[in-house]
Image (cartoon, rainbow, N blue to C red; front, side, top):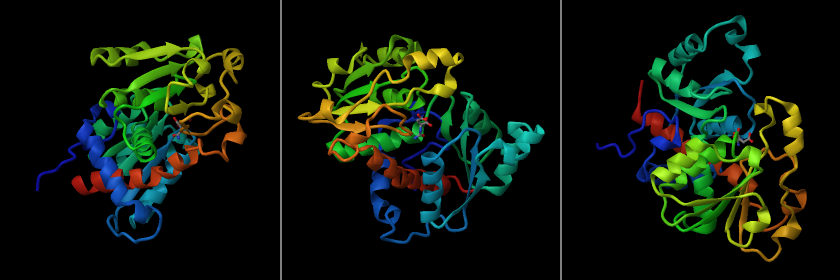
Length: 311
Ligand code: NCD
């Protein structure tokens, strides 16, 4: 049988073609009933997923666990290094080798860029990057694209503003890279000057001739877009906390600003203060739906990778 999805690891969204993304998005929609517990699936019965979370996580870890369990698989792992032998000084490579012996696939979150790639080079089971420092967060991007497609109907032709911490936010790095695969996207970057999109990503966009505009005020773009993608200022990545305090609260979206607009508000979460709670009960709020979409998307990823790459 010809394999349509050839990737063995999910490290960076830059490794995806548009048809790879379509494959996962289509697979996710066929798994919606299982994700919502309306149907039972035994697709991954007997399989074990290893979760190595060196950095905190709520949604990513829980949705990978839910996805694996909905497919009748099981999970093992840790969410702080204190409960693993990493705290005794074991190297990441040795820990990963142990997991390779026990699991059918590995999900890694780490504060350093490149760690998932490094691990994928030392183990033979599929490795999924669940966020590497300020680098990439490819599975978040897949669920972001899935949400846009479901809510707007298309990804081509969208007008989207990425707002907040564009320097350290890995979700916006992956999303900007992915949008280069779509046609006629109008892309705006809204951030304080200190937290602009890194040159490396701008270079990726320039290379494929994708245009974008960098602005510093939400009022410059709010009437132009159909998606506001809001992000948290990544406090943990600041070297000097004073710099964080100066910028904190720079952008806050509230209900009044949105009234009469034809747009949706997305956020990878956690939110701190960048979306006021009065937006939660409005039609603009798609951030909780977005978080729920993580389950069918991560089911599609796990099913595809584990079935395509049996041990
Ligand atoms: C994001 C992350 O960890 O990069 N959260 C997530 O995975 N949904 C965003 C963030 O922490 O701000």
